[in-house]
Amino acid sequence: MKNKDKDCQCPIRTKIPAFSAKLTQPQTPGRNGVIKFDKIVTNIQNGYNPTTGIFTAPVAGVYLFSYTVVSAAGKYLHVYLSHNNTKQQTTWMKGSQYETGTADIILILKKGDQVAVKVHGSNTVYSDGRNLFSSFSGFLIAQ
Image (cartoon, rainbow, N blue to C red):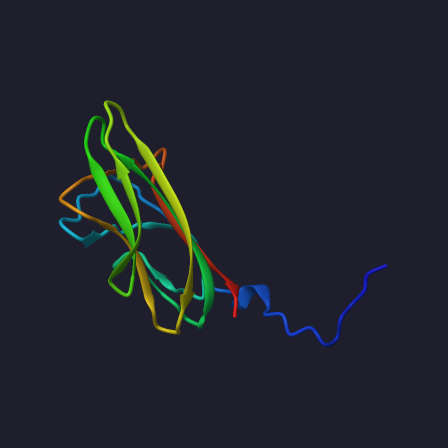
């Protein structure tokens, strides 16, 4: 037997902002350049723009963001998550092989706030069309 709460003020799932995007090819955005994760997996409320690589919060609330990036073999890679052009989370990789870095962060956003993953220097983020190693995701946790 299912219990239904008629007073529930829960948002409908199709209204909850959520996105996930992958990188299909290596990218060198330049110093403090935005990584443009170009293959959209999910984009509920269309907050993520694959052309700019920027998520713009369609509603205010608490959001979880996650990114995974891969460095080119033997190359240095330093990326960070930016909230309204302020560095919030940094990932650094350097090894003799392809190195993977991942980070998660919870942020309180206002409607219109922008979040992106940026490259600190002139480094290359590795991915390919078959394996889709690098990704960026986020979703609303609470309003």
